[in-house]
Length: 274
Length: 274
Image 1: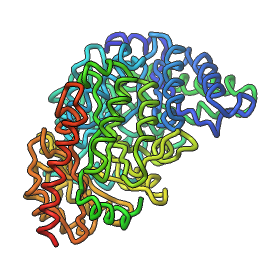
Image 2 (image 1 turned 180 degrees about the vertical axis):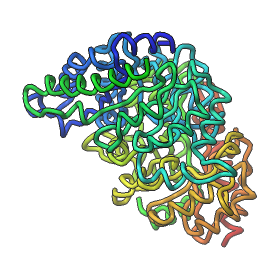
Image 3 (image 1 turned 30 degrees about the vertical axis):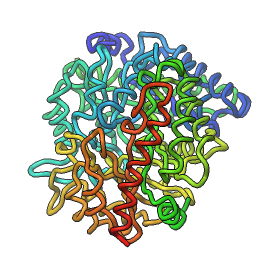
Image 4 (image 1 turned 45 degrees about the vertical axis):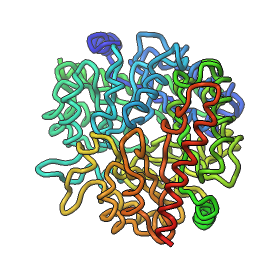
């Protein structure tokens, strides 16, 4: 999915919600069964229930890897439930030297090799620009680079000062040299909403993937106020708040209601923009 | 495997070689078959041929993920060929917020959940100390944190200056606050051998996992001279130089010869130390 299609989808759905499929075998409703089949049924129901209210899904690969090879199969089966109208992100935080990153790119972008074809992958910038270049080599795919995260530990390195800027600002500056608004996004945590104004100086036109609304304490209205650009430029992710809104047999209805509630808040922020 | 066992194994084998299983379907000898079975046969033969000359194996997860779910199965089957005398590292470069890192720890440390039980995992420090804490919660497991890597891109962030030190030095300083020489190692590239003296000021007793000897241009003798501590404290990884030493039906003999050659160089450096 390209940038223009994503923007059109946001206006069509009146939403910039990304639903995070952090599917935890210990948290899904018990009636589904605490096994891979139960997780698959859960994902299918969540996707069907939330499709009208979001524009993207984010698969948190850790939750699938924790189930080993069958978890990878589950990831593949889950992708098949998501229509091509919705941007599908592998939240994998990958990054390594070039030839290894090339293999990770195959794993998440090249269906012929791995059975998986995501639209986007999250990556970690620590090893520098050359470490992520193989991901940028794929056409019509997105590289989403970690910039400023919402955890307390972001103070340890991300917010440390290098010369006149913070490390995460240097990450923004460096990666905008090799990526464009057409193939590069950044992860910026919602709990640091007041910093979005500064971040937009480095990445005015790039989409930002924003986790941390809900369970992690971020505020949607602030994110929109400080982070939205003329093309909207935001994908706000909510995982647990939607997935586990209900725990009974009507969990999907609760998930739909929660996703709809967030979509309606988003619609308000979009109307303010117009 | 604990630290004392690792040190004993190094003295027994007269080697601190880690063989990197970067098994590439496009590089294995054609007679094995360009498929998962061929990759498994390749790994089995390489492990059997190199066991006497090394103390550790490192599985580069990217090469397995590129094959999808069956690649994860291959990783599991490969682990079964490696005896408990040898330290097994998942070179996975993982790291995320706490609850997600907990899932990655399950994926690589908890056999009951994922079918995989590695001794160690490589991790990325960007998101800060709290992002890697769940890995440290496992007993008798090792967390190997990226510090200074051997690629050109290490100049972009790792070697940038924060206050009076480089980012990678800050990483060493911060993670030695939550890890000990019993459960924490660092990745330091062989191509920066002259920096090992400085690195040892921050991590005098920790093991260092050193990639970059061979294909990436690092020099074993320099790594030993500047990096070795009283407990040796080094695991030097070689991947392509061993795996693809031969490409015919005698590839395993070539791999054994190459591993033996490196082991003999290592034995000399160990003798110099004694």
